Image 1 (cartoon, each protein chain N blue to C red):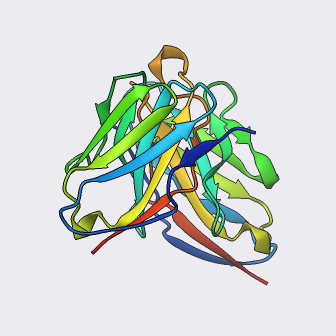
Image 2 (tube, rainbow over the protein chains, first blue to last red; image 1 turned 90 degrees about the vertical axis):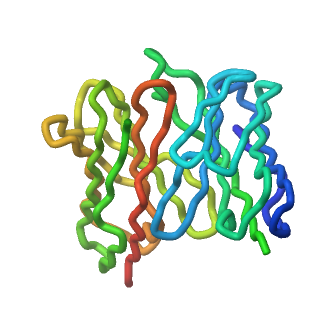
Image 3 (cartoon, chains in turn green, red; image 1 turned 120 degrees about the horizontal axis):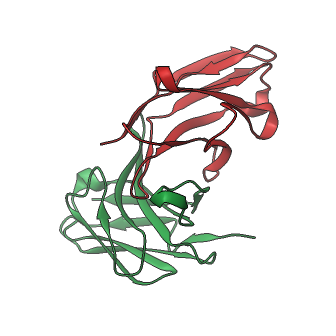
Length: 117
Length: 112
């Protein structure tokens, strides 16, 4: 059974803390993604990666960074957590499609609900 | 830049009613399109996808979607909904560079 695992289901952090969200996939996928999900705003792409050590900014990268040192692991880092980063964070992975397009199914983790107080 | 618009934010239907959820996209090149569903308390899962060929694609649980290139649309349909279809539905677009962009989602509630 394919699996994307996020290290925590729930996290509570204080304003200004450095926060690490970890994601591991066991499908040998090239692509990995970090989204945040907020009511009424859908899923917004923060960062994605198509290879080890490669990263691309998504639509809302401000205040975040990422790390991909190994193919199976993609970390999201909140450099200095703020209350407006309280959200559900979703990790996903997919295999590299033809023509450089993500044309294969993305598999999602269960999400990490982060609360910044 | 690529983007996805879902205009129906909340939809309430009675069981056996027909469903159509709108999805429009913006991207100038070749696209791949998806519909994902999120049932309460569960992770997102794929309903159906369009890559090329027949613009009418069929997915799981009786869902289908039609890709109309001239309208930049990929609407989701189901002839007869069930209470168990209550969920949030997301349209997604993959354009160039492996970027996968989602819409804002549509909350569907099916009443008995």
